[in-house]
Length: 313
Image 1: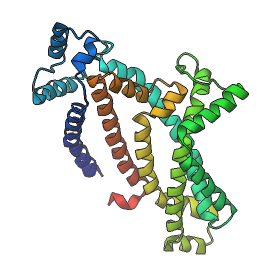
Image 2 (image 1 turned 120 degrees about the vertical axis):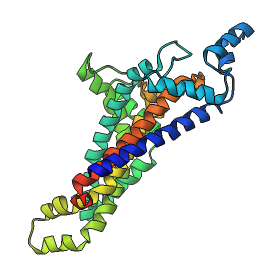
Image 3 (image 1 turned 45 degrees about the vertical axis):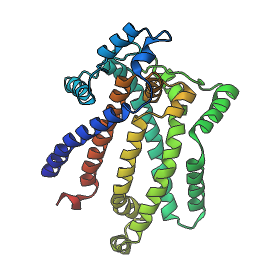
C-alpha cells in the first residue's frame, strides 16, 4: 500500500504540470485584449501599453507561462487585474463557502442515495424498488435552478421559514448560516442522491447474487448482517469513485445554484472573472479545482484498501 501511495504521489507532479499548461493555454484563446478591456472606454494608448507591460502581455506565451508558474511555486497566484487583490486572498475568501456547501450537499446525497439504493436492490421488483426508481428519475430530470426557485417560493415566500438568498458566515451566526445553506445544499444533494441511488442499486444487485452472499445466508446469518456487512462493503468501490467525482464537481462551484441563492462561492467568482477577462483569477480558481479533483481521486483510491482488504495484496 505504501509503494502504491508513493507511485500515485509521483504521478501527480507531471499531471499538475500538464493541467497548468492546459489552463494557461486555453485561457489565452478567449477573445479580446485584457489590457484594452481594463483601460475602459477611452482606451488611452499609454494606459493600454502600461497594462500590457504590467500583465506581461507584451511577452511571448512561454515567457508569460514561466512568470505564472514561477509565482505559483512560490505560493503567489498573482493579482486580480479587476480589483487589485491577490488571487490567493480571493480564493481563500470564497473557498470556505464552496467547501461548506459541497460537504452539506454531499452529506444529504449520501444519507438519501445510498439507503435508497440498498432498499431498492433488496426489494427488487417491489413497491420500494418502484418508489426509489421514481425518486431517481425525478432527481435526474429536475433542473437545479427550477427546484431552487420552487423551494424559495415555498419555504421563503409562502412559509417564511428560511431566507430566500444570501450567506451568513458560521463564525458570525451558526443558526443563520445553516438556514441560508440548507436549501442550496438540498438542491445540489438531490441530483447527486439520484445518481448515487442508481449506482448503489446496480452494485448491490450484482453483489447480492454472488456465491459468498448465498453462502452467508445459508449459514443462517441475519439478513441485515448479510446486506450491510457482506454485500454493501463489497459494493462500495464504484460508490466511492462516484462520490469523489461528484464532490470534486461541487468544489469546482455550482454556478446556477449559487446564482439563484446568491451564494458567494467559487461558481460566482469564476463567472465574474471570465466576463471581466480577469485571467489570473480564472487560472487560479481552475488550478485549485484541478488539484482538488486529483486529491479526491487519490483519497478514493486509498479508501478502496479500507473497504476491500483483497486490494492490499
